Length: 78
Image 1 (cartoon, one colour):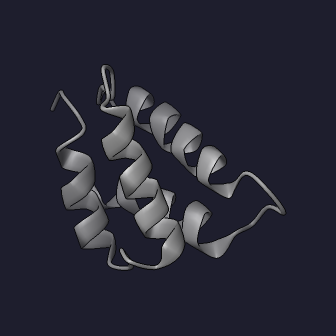
Image 2: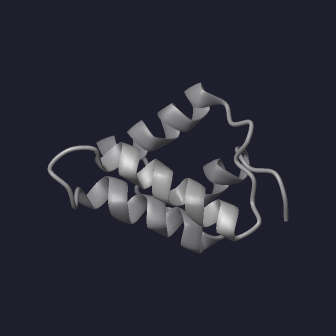
């Protein structure tokens, strides 16, 4: 999992570009970006993914490096 994947998730979830659905849009965008990068989020622990996205949205996780570390634990692949 690269810094770029984490930065993408953070940018969408924390900056609220949409009126509604920022967490869903952030996760879906990350999911597609990971798939295009050869990383696999399947099967993902739904509770862990939810906790990660909510932590980013609530401001508990603000450092992209920390988000990348958490994302690494959810992925398989290179």
